[in-house]
Image (cartoon, rainbow, N blue to C red; front, side):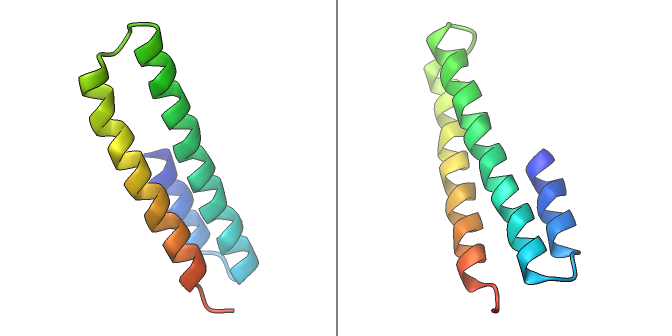
Length: 74
């Protein structure tokens, strides 16, 4: 949810540099979420099966974010 808000805010910015900054923040948030899931698995708070689905989605979201960053006009 937080990443979606960050992406939306970034897309509303007037400069490419600002938009890129917010997209990179969203990618960082996804990496942070991945870390929290790994900690949850290691401590037994979350089953690996459950966390695996979320981890796969995070990988997909990060790929999409970086593809969008590459395609932004100069």
